[in-house]
Image (spheres, rainbow, N blue to C red):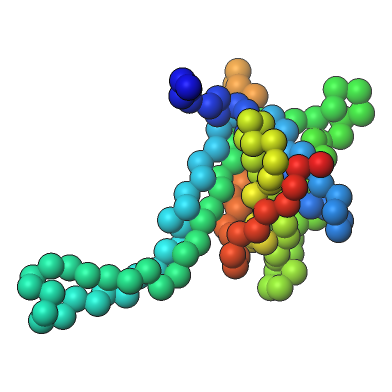
Length: 151
């Protein structure tokens, strides 16, 4: 069997807008999944460690940063539904209401979505004279990750 790298453009991202209703987040051109975000460790080095550092992981976290273009429907002018939900519904929420579910997978992963309860930080929007407007956000996992079947 020959191993081949997977295409970065094959990743799929969705945000839950209502229970079991998922909106695709479109026009993504780059992403960064950081499985070590918010990791905390406790040093356990002691005299018996013979000068070697020791530690235990006490907390795990993760983040997913998405970047792309601000996308609108060419007929209606409506923003991409996934982007619009993040920008207008999720972004203003605070406290316990700041949580929402997101899920993602690569198109080659046909059995399960990775699902996170997450908080979200909106990213910068911008562009130059001959650029397309940018759009971005970062999700930070809260609690343990889960999975759900691909329907």
